[in-house]
Image (cartoon, rainbow, N blue to C red; front, side, top):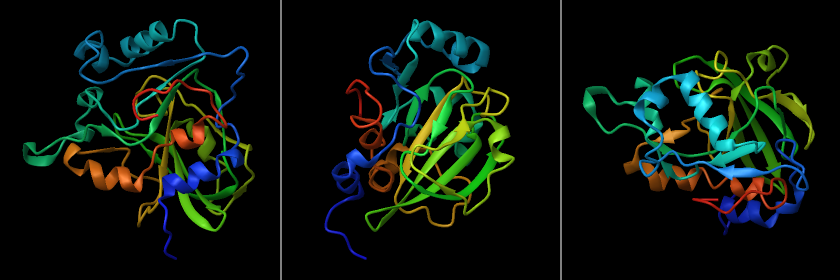
Amino acid sequence: MHYTNTLAEWIARHGTQFSKLVPFDEGTDSVVPLDFTAANTQLSPEIVADTSLFSAYIQQQLAGARYGIGGYNEHRTVYSRSSHFDTANGGEPRRLHLGVDIWCAEGTPVSAPVSGLVHSFAFNNNHGDYGATIILSHQLDGRSFYTLYGHLSIADLENVREGNYLVGGEVFAHVGPPSDNGNWPPHLHFQVIENIGTYIGDYPGVCRYSERASYLSNCPDPGLILHPATFSVPNIGGL
């Protein structure tokens, strides 16, 4: 079916239908923006390379806030921590982030923002990769799209099955520890995908800058789902 508007426009039009992705109380919880570009000179290569130091840095930046957030359409330096994002023969590395990261406590529950089916899941166990990953498929007023959840707890993969139906707002996963999440400080990678192609349990969350236009077209801003309806966050970067 041909649509005259983009998926981003479609999602924005249906914003009131989304449930909270993570627990958030607008009256008591706070959110801080986090920057992982070259402009952030506090984030040294030594910190990025060491998961313990990186985790301590995140906690320092949160300064008591429940969540940190950012990342969509962000050209990041942190991916230098893993060869997973490099290209063979020294070609252009992948550095442009295609989702939103929600930095929070290990074990934070993750809920489906809108009803859908489990499309696929996998343990992407490379250093710097997603670790435990679940992808959901959705039909919103007749239009299909997918949402990807990376850096989850591996225990969440034990009972999940492809085709399982989830109601919007239903908890289906939890933010995982570094041992489960690709050796990152605990956080959730949340990404919206229009055409997932043949990918199963995986889809690029980071692309080469030269591929930016095509990937951003296929992966619209997840902030359209996160706020204002479900997660009150500051308007930073691509959000």
